[in-house]
Amino acid sequence: MTAPKTDARPAACRRLGISGRVQGVGYREWALRTARSLGLKGWVRNRSDGSVEAVVCGDAAALDQLVEACRAGPPMARVDAIDQRAEAIGDWPDFTIAATR
Image (cartoon, rainbow, N blue to C red; front, side, top):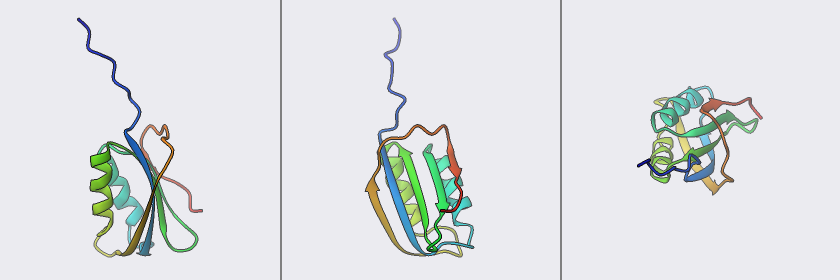
C-alpha cells in the first residue's frame, strides 16, 4: 500500500509590513534565519520608506509564530507596527532576502 499524496503547497501566505527601527539593525538577516527555522518560504526586503516587507508562506501555525517573533525582531530593532494581509499562495523554493524596493 502506498502513502497518499500530500499537497506540497503551503497552507497560507501573508504579506507583512513591519515599521519602526527595522533597517540597519540586521532585521532582514534575522527574519531569514527565523523563517527558515520555522520551515517557511518567501522573501524579506527593505522598503525605501524605512520599513521592512515580507511575503511568507507555509503552515498557518508557523506563520503565527513568525509574526509574534517579528514583533520583537533582533536585539537592536524597535518594531512599532506590523500590518498583515492575506497573500496569494506563491511557489518559492526557500526563504530569501530580496532587493530593496
